[in-house]
Length: 262
Image (tube, rainbow, N blue to C red):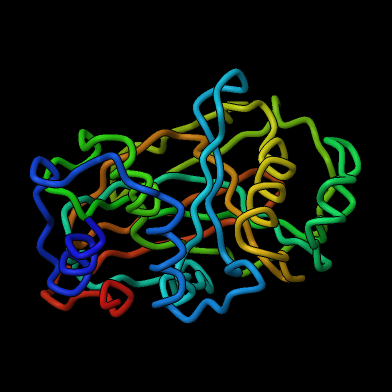
């Protein structure tokens, strides 16, 4: 399975999930992939995605490759991705949170759902490119999706990092513009009600399995929009009222993004 993912990353050709066993050690696969991307044992990778469909269900966490984290400088200077090398042009609007201090296992075990807020120093808008290394896309077995970094293609972070303050997320408005399509509006649509709900489970997971989480680490917190469909050449803009904006542009050429080459 690890070899199938590696070949899909390198070639840009999705693998057939039907021929891959799904009784795998997902954590071991993710750790191996992170090490190939420069992670060193003893501390966790610097970028993560975390989330789940409901507060009643377990959350999922996956480390993300640093080379796939792209800045969105402005509307005129969006993050740009060469033609996706795999299969999907899915996009999701999210909030990213940044940790302001180092968190080791001992500290993580003392945290509560309230006290964990004090570790966050900033937040920004994020766009996740949802992609898959499996030919079956999101219909592949769940363990294979997890091993594929929860179907992660790239992460776009807004330029403006704002001081983190708890807010009424139920009133938070988010808008997404894809090309010349009508603007799509979402309000209070985070599946957990509050994006910060991922913080404690994520830090407990990361420090248990990966070591300490270093200051400056960033976690995305789940989609406000579900997966929205873009296409080759699409331009995507995401805005959260009172927070920030981010822009992503897919290329229409044939170049594969460099972060597919692990």
